[in-house]
Length: 138
Image (cartoon, rainbow, N blue to C red; front, side, top):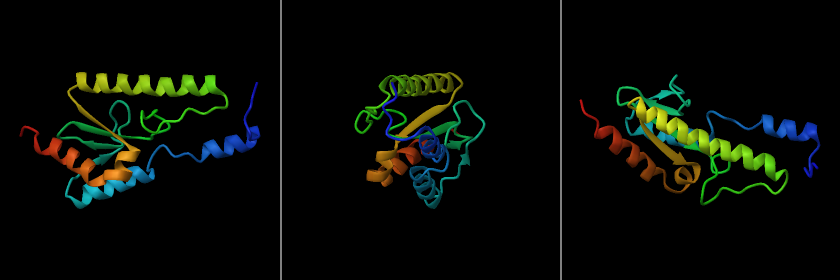
């Protein structure tokens, strides 16, 4: 039984407006890294489609939305259509773990950042990434 408060057409329009790239948290992080002198590639063709990639350092940065990646602090499971959302969000978590594992196996370091970390402590996130970059062997 569908308990959605929107019509199918309304829901489709709403979902189509959700961005997978160039989200505000991602843009804030990119600007802060760039202003600190950290140079990166965007959406580099490596497994999992990282948001930010430092190719020579082999570091992949993912900016994870609290809803879509089920943040333990802020992730809220929808009350409507529970089974659909449970499967979808659980699969996102599973995919994140698999991507982390495969990238690590291929010699990449993975940094995952929650959107709330960027909103509440951008400087700390930038420092965390910069520290990883500074500790790379030449």
